[in-house]
Image 1 (cartoon, one colour):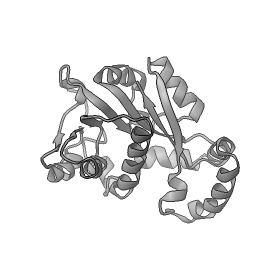
Image 2 (tube, helix red, strand yellow; image 1 turned 180 degrees about the vertical axis):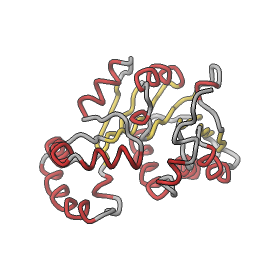
Image 3 (tube, helix red, strand yellow; image 1 turned 30 degrees about the vertical axis):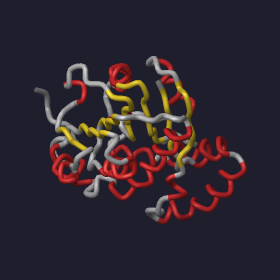
Image 4 (cartoon, one colour; image 1 turned 90 degrees about the vertical axis):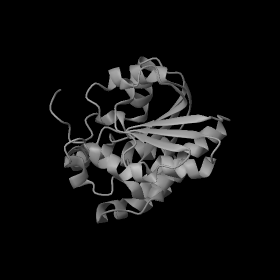
Length: 233
């Protein structure tokens, strides 16, 4: 076995003690939106890198017992949090999904995941076979203001472990390059819809809101603060 990752040795939990549970209900609603819009009605949903498991917990409560949910997580610390949320239609596993033989699902979720993975292209190619539908939530870290300031990218790297950085165009190109057929996508507005953390984000919130209402693509490229939610096959 190789050296433990920051997700396995407790470093990530030290820096992110809530494991982002506070954003989970909002993320679950985005997932419900894209699946509902495209009339995807799964009976099995899996999340790879499920963290504290709260996104799946929210989805399991929303969809009800007729849908089965499985969460896979390599961090023992996160697993200690999520395993307490298990119920009839929700189970968590402390293991790599790819160690599960030929396990497959109707939908696989990768929510803010592959930007953390060293070999993200290999990860995406392997994930493609695990479900008919895949839902990706991808932070769009590259914008004019983040490049000019540089600190947002470096802070994200230090605090949440982003190793790869995307625009909408490069994120969609990566999915195409690894064999996915993109069915639908839209921006998610965490910078507008979630509580602003820090004075800099508060200052940018109003201009982001005004400009996003006028021209979404331009606002995302210039000011950042958005992610991309993608439904793919």
